[in-house]
Image 1 (tube, rainbow, N blue to C red):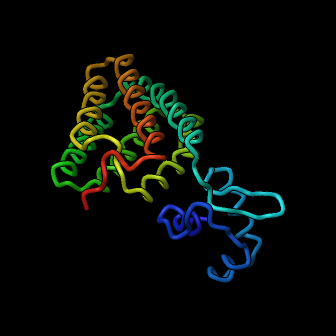
Image 2 (cartoon, rainbow, N blue to C red):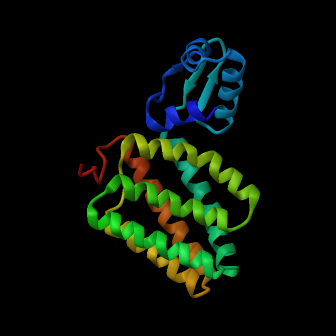
Image 3 (spheres, rainbow, N blue to C red):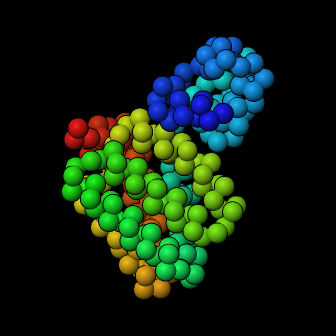
Length: 211
């Protein structure tokens, strides 16, 4: 399962590509049964789609799919950051500050791929820190698709300094105990990025990778 998932996330298996159980089993030196089960699991994660009489394929994200994912992310993460703000420990505050510092460093160095990865890591950290297992399960299942999209496009949809500023704003709200403000700021950021991603589906990337 992990090997197939990583092949999709790395782009070795591209969106729309057909996944043949026999080929995957042969490449990985295993029987078809565990491959079949892995494909079922990846289907629940949204990374694979199964079509009757055609087989399994690497999932492709439509504009509608992306809009659904980002609006749900905004709702989930707004809740997560409110929970975190109400119960923020010294440890989680330090981790959030460190995360923003790492993002600022990546921005200064012009490392857009690292900044995009750190951006997603920041959001995952918040969802894990909320201690809400069902929220985290839903978040992980849909953001696997977003990570794939980011890895394949290697693109940020906001200027690097704006990404750092927005995340810094959220952390400052958390530090000051402003749960509602933190939730609104995070939701606003996610929805703005989501709209830019959706527009970017049919247009050149607004902020192309500098490498």
